[in-house]
Image (cartoon, rainbow, N blue to C red):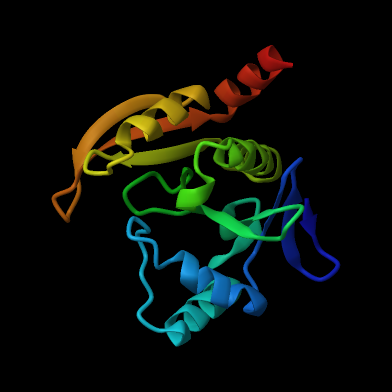
Length: 189
């Protein structure tokens, strides 16, 4: 659900609160981003503060034709940050598609948080926006590549193509269509 009373994006699942970051999260988020395999590193907390302001004011959009956001995954019972997830516009893919990214804390991996968050986020994107395809880009250099591919297939993604990006990183693209997701959900229930 998008809580419009105080204009904050919040989705609740069984174990998670998925929401936009706020000022009170910045210390925990800064520590979180210091993990070696996290792809964005902030050299100063002030940089993170500016990034969070940018997300709130310029990036996070919940319009049907332009849905894109970066949100935190917080344990419901402890309010601890366990990961983040993003739905973004990416110039490497079609403008009608959205790319999905996520990162889970090292001490919270293999507990099903990403799967739980993804289901809630897919439900939101496919039911509240006009985007009908979500793309995930899996980098072959990622030490967790096999795990990422396994998760993609488990979530209904199918491989589409391989590509070498500008930074010479090789990657494989996977796509999840709204139709495939909705049919899969019917079969699961």
